[in-house]
Every structure is written in C-alpha cells, then in structure tokens.
Length: 200
Image (cartoon, rainbow, N blue to C red; front, side, top):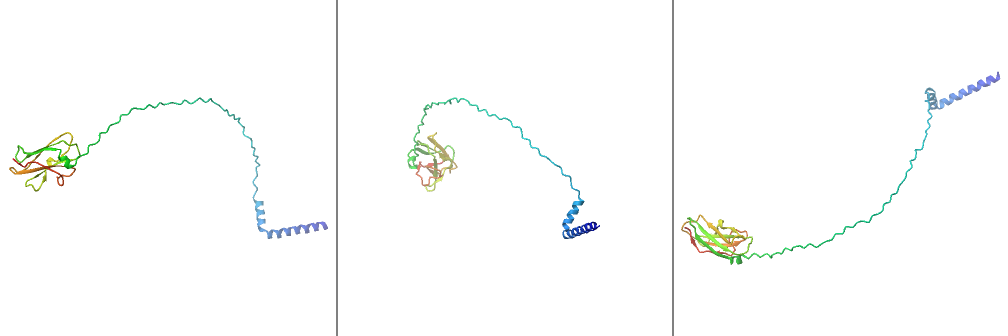
C-alpha cells in the first residue's frame, strides 16, 4: 500500500513538472501538438544505381603517303619587240605678229548683190587654237567686227572667204584682219588692212 502511494506521488510530481515545462515553453508544446495532429508522410527509399557506360574501342590509323616531287613549271620569258612611237615635236603656235606674216592676199571686193562686200585671204601657217577676226570701219576711226567673218584656224583649208552684208550702197568701207585667241575684236592685236572698197 505504501508502494502504491509512493508511486502515485511520483506520478503526480511528473505531471506537475510537465505542466510547468509546458507553461515555460509554449512554442515547443504547439509544435509537439502539430506533430501529433499531422500524420507523417511516408518516406520512400530510393537507391541510385550507377552503371558505367560501355567503352568503345578507338583505333587511330596513321596513313602515310609517299611524297611525290613537286613539278615546277618553268616559264621562259621572251622579250617582245615593241614599237616605239616616234613623237613629232609639236610646232609652237606663232605669235599674232608672226602669224600675220603668214597671211597673204587679204582683199575686199564688191559683191554681186547690193550692200555686200566679199572678203578673202590666204593663210599658210600651222594650225592653232585661234580665230580670224575681220573688222570694218566707215570713217577709219570706229571699227566694228563682222560676225559672219569670225572663222577658226583649221588645217583643212588655206583659203578663207566670208561676206559682209547689210551695208549702205555707195558707201566706202575699210577692212582689217587679225588673229586672236578667244576675243571677238582686234583690240590690242596686230592687224593687216585691205584696200578701201565701195559697197555696190
């Protein structure tokens, strides 16, 4: 009987300690309660079996070939006879004064039609980038260019002709000739004059 009383007192003491412990640690008691309420998921035991891959035998075959001697192409260079173009030295264009000396037979004659005068001249000089300009004057003081007589110097012809029109019939005119570059008058250029002529 005495043993039963001691055992009961011990049991009550354990319950008291348990209550005190639960009051001191509420989080632990809650976690324990949750564990009691939530059934544990069954755990599966998995075994990973690693098997080595089969090894394939690799054989390296070294093939050797005989080296054939390289064929060298030999090219024979033969000198080709080239014709050398002989360049004729360009003849320098004469100065306007010197070019006038190559002019010849500058003449002004009455034309068949009224109010017209025919002009002509010869030139035996070299071809040059220049123009013949003919000017006329009614009083010998004012010179006006004759547009129809402005002619480039060419190698195809040595005789040049032109006609001055719309002149006053019965009036006397004097003509002069010069060689110029690009200008349209004989101003500041040497000139050669023809005999005065009366327009028909």
